[in-house]
Length: 321
Image 1 (tube, rainbow, N blue to C red):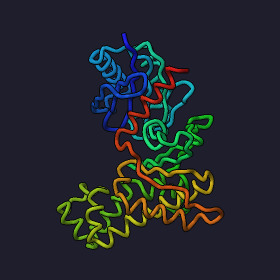
Image 2: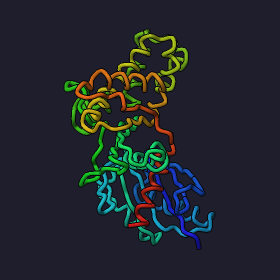
Image 3: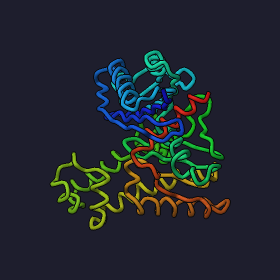
């Protein structure tokens, strides 16, 4: 029976899965609700069932499995350390052992932002520049990141290298879930930007946004704000403020790494040119020690598939090790 690689992107609301050939090209893709409230054992059972179903449908034997998870993991043991948005925070859940025992295949676990960075190397911007040095900002419900140097993902001893969203951007800023104050995540995540939009709407400063969501604050996301920004000056300023914070974080990374590319992914990246142009401008303004003109800023080429494609690439590494 032909071999296949299984990739799992474990999200807070959705589990995305892909079965790919040994070159990493997806053959089957599926998604199911995470339902994390049912507990880790239930989630892992359904992941196992999902992989088995895809294997049967494609008539391929699973050679290795890669799993991207939204939090901290022990990359040596495949045990989760802290998934902040899951009930019980999944402390010390033996994800790799559970799937390895059931599916008789090697399993590798990695933080989802680092997994998405790996995808960008293997399937995105890295395809045309194999030795690229890049920093990937995942801008969504939270802000994560990953760093690659000369075409290789850098993880550090604990797999935690590249936590770009937890740079201190404002020393007196809001308290972050990580315990710090003023992290980029508190200032430029999707919920942080949306909260500012709601505040402006309630102050009567965002009539277009108010009309767009019929005054329902629960419907405000960065997508609606991007539309409203065309006529609501206050909303446009809120977006520019968040983009400026992201630019400051990116400028810090440029000063440290001088990468070829800054990649912006996740839902906030859908803001488009107003985001990429602002980040580029801030980098050029703040990085004065050496020319930053060769540092490009671009959106991810993989969109919502970055996580699951990165998990496939992770499986390929597990299969070859």
